[in-house]
Amino acid sequence: MSKSFQPDVTVDSRGATCPGPLMDLIGKVKKLDAGTVIELKTTDSSSSHDVPEWVAKAGHETLDVVEHEDEGYWSVFIETTK
Amino acid sequence: MTERIVIVGGGTGGTVLTNRLTDELATEIEAGDVEVTLVNDTPEQTYKPAFLYVAFGKKTMHEARRPLADLVDLRHATLVVDRVTGIDTENKHLTLAKDDGGLDYDHLVLAMGANLAPDEVPGLKEGGHHFYGPNGAEKLRDALAGFTEGHIVLSVIGVPHMCPAAPVEFVLMADAWFRERGLRDQVEITYTYPIMRAHGIKSIAEWATELFEERDINLETFFNAEEVDPDAKVITTMEGTELDYDLLVAIPPHTGSDLVTDAGLGDDGWVEVDKNTLEAKNADDVYAIGDVAELPTSKAGSVAHYAAGTVADRLASRVRGLVPTETFDGKTICFIESGMDEATFVEFSYGDEPVVREPSQLLHWSKLAYNESYWLTARGLI
Ligand SMILES: Cc1cc2nc3c(=O)[nH]c(=O)nc-3n(C[C@H](O)[C@H](O)[C@H](O)COP(=O)(O)OP(=O)(O)OC[C@H]3O[C@@H](n4cnc5c(N)ncnc54)[C@H](O)[C@@H]3O)c2cc1C
Image (cartoon, rainbow over all chains, first blue to last red; front, top):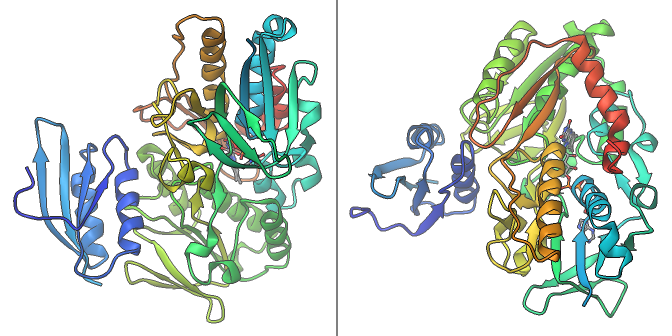
């Protein structure tokens, strides 16, 4: 469960395959102010490491990656910095 | 009572569906039990894959258009040339731009395709070319014809976009085209893609990356254009990169249809559907096929074509009072040009990783032959 972070925005990309979740996130980040916490929900296992890679490259911050094993998805928490 | 089937959009998906339905349900249509209506906002259909060849002066826009009246069987279907301006799924009614009375339906299929949204990136409209529409393709043809030296940047800005293969094809064709003309040494080519590799599909990304290296095409990944400065000719990205260009060819962001968002059928204009039955998740008796449907596969003509087959079968069962059983497995086929006279081919369904075949001249001719025979496919003849 996502206990540690309360997202301001949730991007639900469950069911989408790569690059869907990352592109959904990029589309959202474009429109948000610095300091926004986003929860990206993804069922695509590769997104759980590809997304943090992009987040680092773009200069934002990955706060946590939480696996919801029972429900078969990951939550990637990101904070925008610019 | 007559069952009214209305199809919105007379592109690849809408025409194939109209022809499949009128074929399958000819007896019911003649008996007055079923009516099939196709609504399109123009009297002609434009075959979009031709744009790639128009850009290199290998085809004309004239060859890429056909009157819809020649493509559908008007004995069994009604063609309405009008623009749908509103969808009311509660009352099963469509509003039309010209006809005040609008149209009622019992079964609705949305096949409005995708739209380009270059305005989403400041400066892109002024600074960038594209080959994703008729005017863009012709303007790019003129720009390419006069381009003898400098840096061409092909930037994939929008994902998802129509035909995920087309940007890769463009740079490989440009490479061969400038070589043939003896100008390749003076032309630098760069391809950019938003994620960590050259393409959404891993095997295509690996294949393309190797070819780009062989052919001296630069590759920039994690490249999400944020702004284009048309005067300084610079693209700035969300990742903080700056790239100079002399000729920018961009795949603009895509959106679905406002009608879809307004009708509550899906965000960003893409209709949320069950990926196997193609039934809308948020309304009864509504289906979506082709680019306007939110499906976990490519926005490609082949997908629109196969999805049309599935919906035709399901609708035929429905109007006959049978339980529909036909489903769509995500089948996608795609020819990919890898130069001016060679191409490869991929085929996959939902969840598959396609195998990229060795490029050959035969596959190039197959793609050209398919382009020629497309009109027969749309008419339901092959
Ligand atoms: C450059 C390029 C190259 C491509 N190459 C290939 C390829 O090699 N292979 C491949 O499989 N695919 C290719 N494609 C993709 C292919 O063209 C599309 O996926 C396909 O056309 C989608 O079909 P569709 O029926 O969903 O939409 P479209 O064919 O786009 O048709 C939509 C129709 O709906 C109409 N419409 C829209 N809104 C309304 C409204 N409100 N009221 C009435 N009518 C409306 C439009 O005018 C249009 O006629 C390419 C695309 C491009 C741009």
